[in-house]
Image (tube, rainbow, N blue to C red; front, side):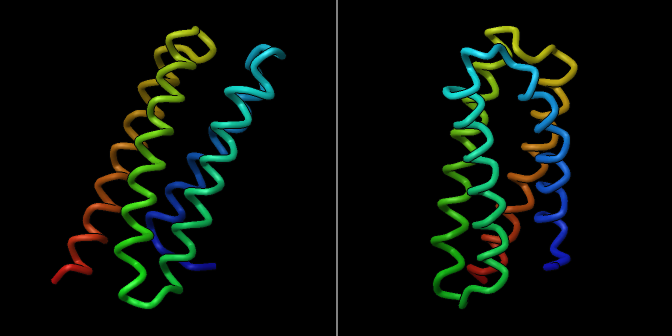
Amino acid sequence: MTGTPVVEKFKKLICWMLPKVSKFPKDQRYLLVDRIVQLMFDILERMIGVVYAIKGEKRNMLRKINLDIDKLRYFIRIAYEMKYINLKGYDYFTKQIVETGKMIGGWYRYLNN
């Protein structure tokens, strides 16, 4: 267990999101759901990897995490626009992902000092 707050926060977001995506229409299970779930687990794996990486690798890994978070935002926006998640769920997800992004940004700035 890494114990890093951003990793724990994102893990909780995954645990919140998995039951939501399981309710998406069946025709989206191999399209949007797979993309969302895979991307979330990729982000989590990268976050854990940053904890154990050497300093020179961490900045590049954090940039990739930021890119993946941005992709995830778009996929969730699509899910909201298609009415697969409601406004309350979309707002919660957006708040959590913005906070996660800020934490990643802080981590990146810390490494540049």
